[in-house]
Image (tube, rainbow, N blue to C red):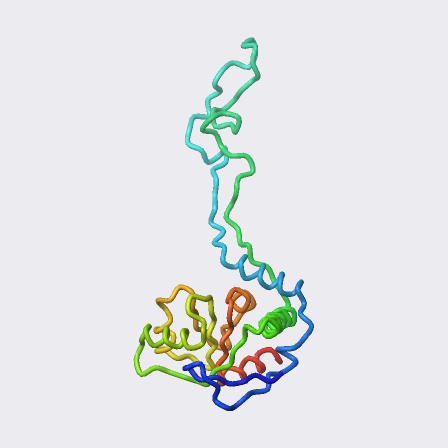
Amino acid sequence: MEVKVLDINGKETGRSVQLADSVFAIEPNKHAIYLDVKQYLANQRQGTHKAKERAEVAGSTRKIKKQKGTGTARAGSAKSPVFKGGGTIFGPRPRSYSFKLNKALKRLARKSAFTIKAQEANLFVVEDFTFEAPSTKNFINVLKALGLEGKKSLFVLGESNKNVYLSSRNLERASVVTSSELNTYGILNAKSLVLTEGSLEGIVENLSK
């Protein structure tokens, strides 16, 4: 798959790159995407929810009334779940929501996500760039030049670039990651995927292991 390379002014550089069909032109596996996104979202959950059960509620354990002769149901501790202020029956307990997925399936999911972006024509390749100093204004100018202002976009760099990262940090709808930090959810959550030339080799290498 051949894609034209743009500069940060949104103009064609006259060059093009050949994207690997094994990564950007496969048959998307939607179930693999579902599982990988599900795992990512599950890993974001803290799992610290907790409700007090009858043994943990503060209160007396004295039998609140005699067993027989009242004409009503028998009752023991006031901490019983049937009384107001009592414990919770089968309440939530702290737990981990994480689960395991095979590496091959996660690679398939990322390849499928890349393919979907390419099919939707929401994938761009730009030449490597940097800023002399962190500047949100300069990053906004790049977004405007690429026609991505106001759109949720993900920029993928070949290696960490502090100035570019800091320039995008204040923007709610723009994110910057390196090729090694990519995940299926991040790819699909962005409306547009912007790959720098330097990231392409790393992307293919990471998905070919």
